Image (tube, rainbow, N blue to C red; front, side, top):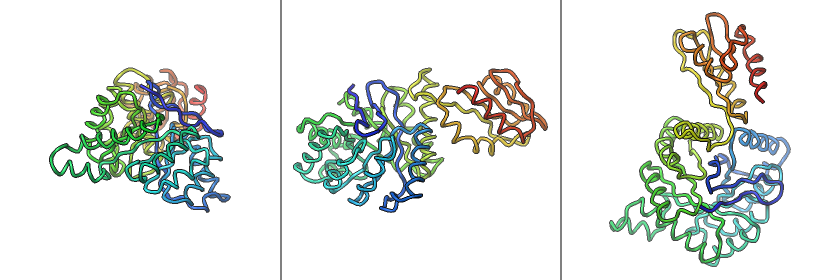
Length: 368
C-alpha cells in the first residue's frame, strides 16, 4: 500500500496515512466560516478548540468551503495552528485553486462535480505543485447521473456503484499523474459502506482508504451504526483514516473514533491508535456512594488528552469497584462514605469525595 503525507507546508504537523500506520482520526468543523472568525476573541476561541481536538487525538480537521470568502478565512486559520486543516470543496474549482495559495493540509473534492476535465486538471496541477494530497470523496447520495441510471436499470447495485464512481475518479487522477490520493466511499447504509470498502480493496489495494458511515444520526444511534460498520473492517485491516459522522459535537466524534479503535486493538491485541487512556467506568446503580457519571463527565476532556497507554477505572460502589480499580493503572471508587484511590493495584489513599479531584489528578500526573 502507498502512503500519503499530509502537512508538508508551513508549520503544519505532518500526518502520514496508509502503509500500516496508525489509523488517523478526523472530524469536521460544524459551523460556517466568516471573515469575523479571523478577528480577536473569535479567532482565539477557534484555535483553542482546534488545539483541544488535537490533544484529544484528532489528526485532521475538515472544513466546508462553499465560497471564496470561506477559503480565505480557512487559509488564515492554517497559519495559526499546527493541525493540518482540510478543505471540502464542491462545484467550483476556483475555490480549490484559491485555497491552494495557503498551507492547507489536504483537499477533499469530487471530480464529478468540480467541473470539466480541464478544471480538474488545473486543480491537480496546482495541488501537485504545492504538495497537497486530495481525497476523492464519493457519497451514496451524490452519485453521478450515469451511474445512478445503471442502478435504475438493474445493471449494478449501490455498492458496485460507489466503487465504480471511485474508480472512474481515480482514472482521472492517473491520467494527470497525480498519486497523492485518499479515497472514501460513504453511505448512510451500513451494508453498502462495508461492502464498498471490501470491494474497493479487492480492486485497488494500494490507495489509502478513509472510512465512515455518513449521516449516521444523533450521538447514540450514530455511534452504534458506525461501530457496527467499522469494527469488522478495521479488524481486517481495512481503513487508514476514519470519521465518526454524528449529529453531535466534534469532540464526541473524536471520542467515538478513539473508542472504536481501542476496541479493535483490544480485540486484536495490537496498537493501531497510538497512545491514549482506556477508561473503565461503572454505569451506576442504587448502591453507588460516588457519583461516577458526574466525575467521569468532568474528567473526560482531560483524560482523552493524556498521551499515555494507561487504564483508568472510575467506579461507584464496593461490589465491583475495588477489584476493577485494582486491575487498572489508576483507580477511584466509592466505598461507603469514603473514596479509595488505587495505583497499580494498591490502595494509595482513602479520602473524602471533596478531595477526589485533586488527588485523582496528582495520581495521573505520576504517569506523565
